[in-house]
Length: 155
Image 1 (cartoon, rainbow, N blue to C red):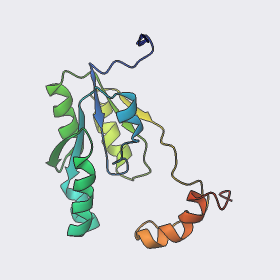
Image 2 (image 1 turned 90 degrees about the vertical axis):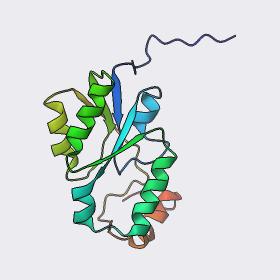
Image 3 (image 1 turned 90 degrees about the horizontal axis):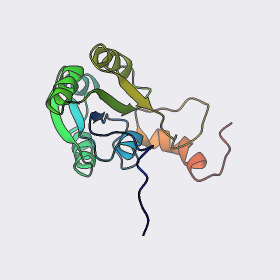
């Protein structure tokens, strides 16, 4: 019988995981590192309005969230929602995964004014150093598919 060595296992009892829109999959590093920790996703009303997402895209995001162990909240102040969630769970810190999203740094800083924020690295889907159009998946995929399937080395 194998005995689980928990000496180096991160303590999930005082941690909440913040899942954001760039990490809505089962390989989210924060969810993997803290599988027992309460997790939250906040529908950012201001961001959704700014991006003008279609109902089809919003439905896709929601369906992704339904497959994850997260509590879904909604609000204009993502940091405040995460801090409220952390307080409800007596959390001493917030763990999330990195993203290049422009609002991420501001939200992280707002949270960090009250609780430490740990940002875990994400293994990139493709290794590409050029510019990729991210507004339309088809344009992105035209470039990315070569790298995703190992047909190119990312240069």
